[in-house]
Length: 463
Image (tube, rainbow, N blue to C red; front, side, top):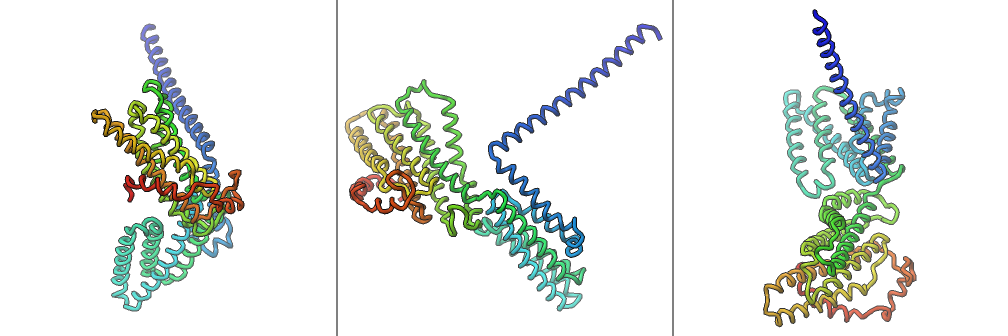
């Protein structure tokens, strides 16, 4: 082998080693970058909502507690391998909020108890029928309960609150009734399974309530108030844009408004889940027994319908709001935003909204004036094509005002059902406000409002 060939071979080896080293270095660099990205996401998530980190710790505490059945021999000798059901129960039952955990725990416990009793009864009937008929009857019972239970799950109310319980019922009944074919200790099997399930569920509920509890009802309360407040800010933003030129828009502000609007429009499933979980929760804080959680869903539904009108209204932009009605549009949008923000504040602080609300009274008067202005303008102006966009925007704004009024009525109903406190003269919740509110000299008469409301309600699509 010549010198040149040896140098060439050495060069190739060095090149291969260098390529391999660079490849390994690149993989390590990518892994480190991925780890760094995950660490930043974890830190951001923990800062945005520390409750998620606390929930993870709570699950760890609950699992550690139920695992004691395996660590200590006296506990293990009583339950044996069945102690694993307690661990499984913690894994599947422990949820983020107290209501969700309590609902799942009760579903699992009651379903296990009922299915166990029925499974023992079915097995007893099968034994009475003889060895030949026993497997036939067991198969028939399993088939019938599976068909019936699965069909019941399709009922909306059952699906919303008891779906998990129905699944556990199907599983437990099948296990107990079928196990009776191969073992004579079916009562002991049911007793151990029920005991461990109840222990696991009770551990979840106790840890969930005692260690930094997360209440679904409180989250629902805050979310409804936030949605109304976002809508109020959007309407005030539309009022500010009425006197801006189309070239002076703020793209960042528009994106922020779009995100807020979409969060309101997409809140239905979240509100329904929170309301369902809240119904399972015991009295806590400001929320007493039989709190009107359904009323929050009604307010949320009206808020989303109002948001649809605001979305359409926002689509026209300031260039669509021109002419002599520009000032009316700006004033009505601003008043609507103020009313909604006052309502959001009333829900958040659990205080009764003012009645009658001066801003709402002014809004109704402005609506009546806008209708009169449009009628006179349509009669005077022969250029109907030019008036059509103005009339469309006016119609959307009037619909928005109607929904603002409906939201105000729903919040007033909520304050009555939930027994919100009254505000005194300084805006502080207290009993003195109840006495002051009975003084008719402080407010306009109801007759003054009803005369305006009749005109507004004529265009109400809800009636």
